[in-house]
Amino acid sequence: MQTWMIYALLSALFAALTAIFGKLGLKSIDSDLATAIRTFFVFLITWGFVFFRSKADGIFHLSKQNWIMLIFSAIATGLSWLFYYRAMQLGKVSEVNVVDKTSIVITLLLAFIFLKEPLTPKIILSASLIFAGMVVMVWK
Image (cartoon, rainbow, N blue to C red; front, side):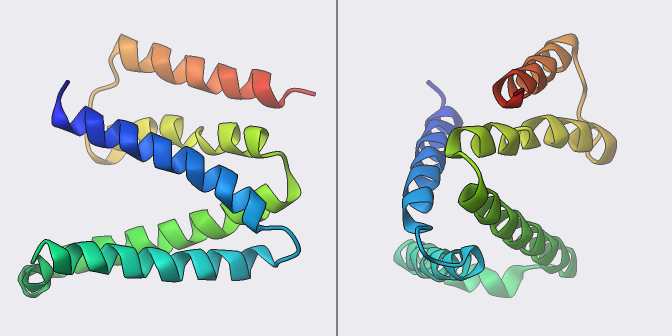
């Protein structure tokens, strides 16, 4: 198994745990406050990793484009988390997570448009199945 696949599977595992722990942590608390608390600890953990791996000096080598794109990414992440936690507070975790994973389909389309990544028949079929699965899961 390739290294990226191991990291991707670990990401999926921790994303799943994020949903379960997040839903449990949202009882009797505002979703925005919950997101802020979560973000604070994400901040501590990620900077801990940076310092533990002695990578902090890399901050001085970032280009203007690196900064701009990372700031845009942070804004998108923050908005995603705020909307995700609000949806989790109002809905079922199983349904919210399935709709949230529609981001895969959106990512594939945006990667095609902005990054010129190919849309092969396999990718189109996979995206269609993900979208169809989402529709089936949330259809009342």
